[in-house]
Length: 210
Image (cartoon, rainbow, N blue to C red; front, side):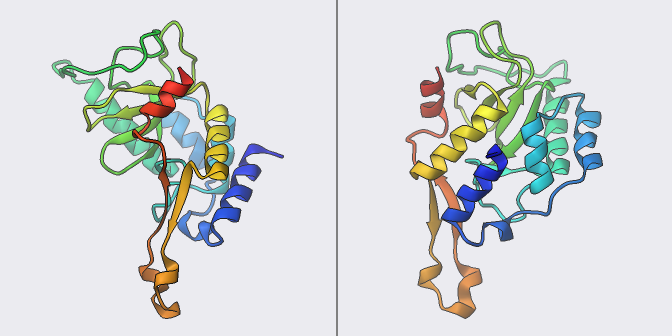
């Protein structure tokens, strides 16, 4: 089974109304615009996911953070580009979780493509500037607004999707759904979202990857 089909089948088994949280699929020109605007390639599996669902219209967090639309990916990349292009910008003291030279020691870079965030500056990105022991296209957790380490959490977008599928199936990425607390005409007040069961934000996952 195609990984995106497996992902959507898993989501459906966990939440019957999951599609109501997601936008309709993006067109090929919309996906190509990401590459045109950023100069970075969109992995095939990410392209397939965007063609299926162009981001989240209500936060569901099925990727661990909120999945971005094509236009949101470009907007988040532009923020990274703007910060990284400032010649007098001082990144300050940053922690780097891995010691095996997996990531370039530059926190902000326009060679990273954001595809998910939490709305408060924490991003998941495709990294196109790995260090000598990293992988081109590896997935990193980039906490731009918190004093947390930048961490590699998967070697590729394909392996990241496989991780998410397993996390959903095992309950490591668990569903919070309080619809049963509301009458039928009040269901719109219910809170529904996926939340991470691991202890740290992504540091535990980085440790397993390491």
